[in-house]
Image 1 (tube, one colour):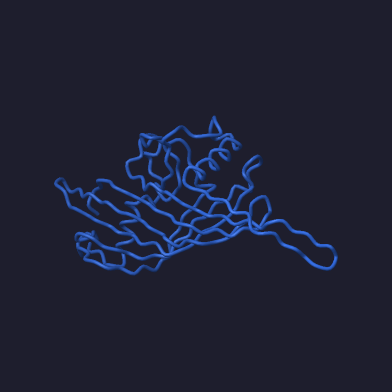
Image 2 (image 1 turned 30 degrees about the vertical axis):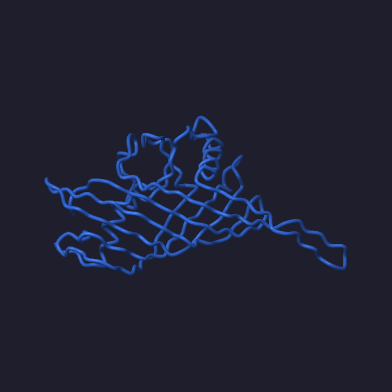
Length: 225
């Protein structure tokens, strides 16, 4: 059955781990989309009111990278009793597989499923640039897709967690390269880049705004659709 261009994202997002959680997640994950972030949180500063004038202090600025996000997830998962320590081992990575965020070790072995805390979604619209093979819907050999994405973090429902909730949205530039191999397989490599993500949230009840970047990298050999 031929696949139209508009279905390219359906196929490639399955490859990027945005379908149902794969059974291989119990061992080595071979279809991991490794996610990295660089975020700036600006929290409401001090507040005072002398009965005449309200005074708001400067925002409290906090920088968070992937390591910091993993630390937040580690503390939350330990508080849930789903991980035996409140930190992950050195070399651990954050990634998407089967549409769910997971934490893996340096060898891509599953440590914990973090999808109850962290989610990632794409819009149904996409703007494509490149060539697509009608028969398979694969890139021939490269396609760029622009999609609107949202990443959400929320562990406020976890007693003993970080009491943090925020979301980020932005336009994702998804670059996909496909190469058909022998044996009815193909190799796909892809990269995501959200350069100007922004959103808002609360930390322990304190309002915050958040901005930054989200990147993803994926490489796997898969069966031709």
